[in-house]
Length: 112
Image (cartoon, rainbow, N blue to C red; front, side, top):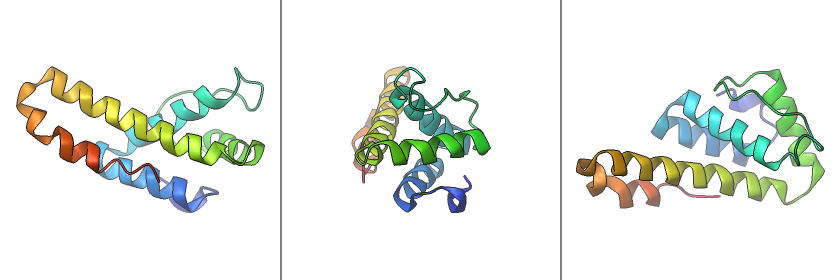
């Protein structure tokens, strides 16, 4: 996930945690989606192609996002967490045998 290149340790840890539970590409796609959702239609930073690859453009946009408003960090963490929870809901809705795991999965989605 190139966490050592991310400008914020908490964001790096959130992406890492998501990668452990959902895979690296999914974790990075969640980060990219969140950044695109927060960019004010491209006013604050350019859109990112959601490809699950943490390249220089994604890292640059992350740095810009964290510098625009102090509360962007919190919004970013909460948005990634929301994507995690939504993904777990999709899993259990598609396969009812997974419902037994839902509460435990969601409990692991620490937004901090």
